[in-house]
Length: 124
Image 1: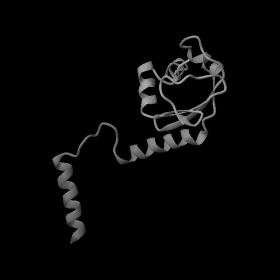
Image 2 (image 1 turned 135 degrees about the horizontal axis):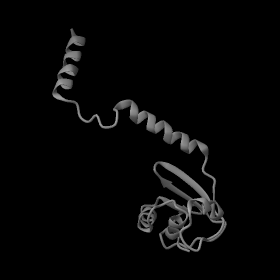
Image 3 (image 1 turned 90 degrees about the vertical axis):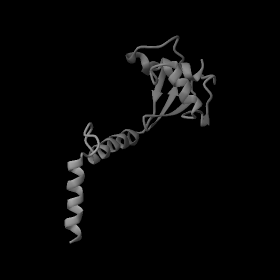
Image 4 (image 1 turned 30 degrees about the vertical axis):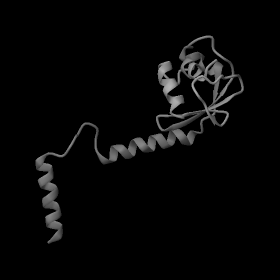
């Protein structure tokens, strides 16, 4: 089975075309080497893929006949992604929230004047 089809079947990507694009961009490695979308996958192969700033590592257990339900995914792959990868994503999410709340947008003219007056008071 092709690697892009496999990643789609085990629900790492919503469509085959997004899985194909990820392979073309070099985000998918098969047994340590960058994999083209047409590369064949066999049981016991190890896949590394980078998605949403997380480096997933998985081992192929078996090849699914077609796209499988979310509850059946564990039959066809073993996820060996370290827990630290998910913790790093949580930290990144918190750091983004620190700088600006979602939806607040650009500063208004009043905000700009307040910032300028703050710096003017600081210089005196």
